[in-house]
Image (cartoon, rainbow, N blue to C red; front, side, top):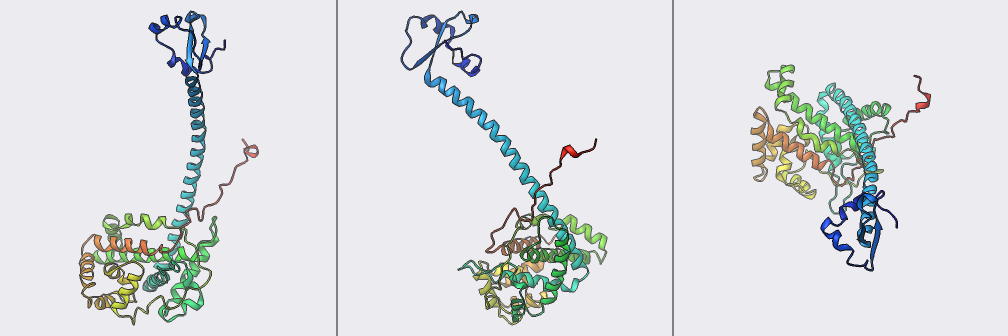
Length: 346
């Protein structure tokens, strides 16, 4: 007979108890059962196992081996994913650094950058799921439209920043869609920081400390993950974006409603609508639906933490900035350079 004891140790758990061994010889082997003998240490007693038990043991052994083998693939996949995340994070940090310096050197252009980002977003059409934050505003035929009047300077600044970003990118050029939305994020952060500095009497060091302690940096996590937008290859259709400086509050409400937002989001995005936030809020305050939200955010901005205003603005911008976009979470990642150990000098 064949001994399974060396190859299937798991069968030992199936061996009958000593009390049942004594009765085993009374009954002949039955069909569908496999008999085998174990070594002399077990007194050469015939031990009988059902065929399905043996097959189950084989299956378990094979299954455990497959799990062990597949776990190595999972580990490799996880490692590759972590490498991609790190590459994207490092690239995004570099982009933010370049944009921060560009905006810091041109603080007066902040309102235009905010409106540029909003107008690129507001071409989104919910019915056809077309348009949105796809960088189409970069095309001369689109940025020259009446609703985009005065935004060319902001676009030119971002073009210059893009050249610097792309010159040192290992994962390919940044899309205009990502660039414009990240520029809006940097501009928003600059306004938050400027407010903290004003609260500290103009002291930059104290203002920075105040923003670090009470600011909203931790709220940007979801926005940062929406990184990998694709660029449109042609301008978006005309007539989708209002001329904010000429639009009535009702027209603004209608446009926000068309992309899935309401009076609350309109109020919190007031800094993106026109060059003068105070003037925009004064206009919005004429509408009874928008007024409570305008007052809420005005009160919030007077507090130390500004939590309600900053959190709601970040949340709204995050949702708007990916309307209609399929985010490529592998964008800007690149193969890790392999090292030929045979050429290493020891």
